[in-house]
Image (cartoon, rainbow, N blue to C red):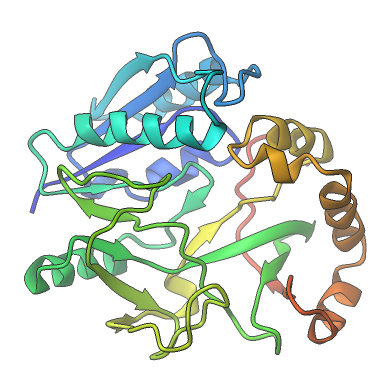
Length: 280
């Protein structure tokens, strides 16, 4: 089974750790980036820093660097997101059986469970692998984070889209695709609050094997910039979103303690490796 991957070079924060976590199991990595150094919303992003990082870790010349024009201001940001992903996926599909589509703030603790799930999906005729991620909301101390959880504080899986798809797949929205999904979860039943309780689970992995998604783990300044370049900027740029992030990061244990009182936005205090580039 020949595995390729694609990378959208825009955010350097966890880029090296993300690519290195699956570098050994793929044969080719398509690096897609905006030639003008612009985001999907038209704001400047540190593309050159991303390319420097990737060239430094590409010890086996697996990376293929492909510029493009993805800041199409006459389109919605999420349409540009999907367009860039589809462009990269089409290129990565050449000569591949499956393509990994991890974002650069997602790190695999071990690539073996995901590869095993892909093999199971291949054998069972599925078109993609829905693999669980731990969604980290904020870093609150050395190796300590607020992590999305169930209302009762148990680990919850996050599924932003299949992390692996068959070559030639057509994306519907961002990473999502209308293909039969082989679903891996943290327990034999659904643990994601955004999926129905009856969602089928084909395979189970431990919490320690889930992808670590350092989604909102940023310094204050970087978080403000991220809210501006994200495809979800229409929601993230609201002042109440930023204010809630600051308040919860400053009072993590109170945030976790009061989670059962909220109808959504449930968190627990947990531990994960510190991978952010540079100093805190």
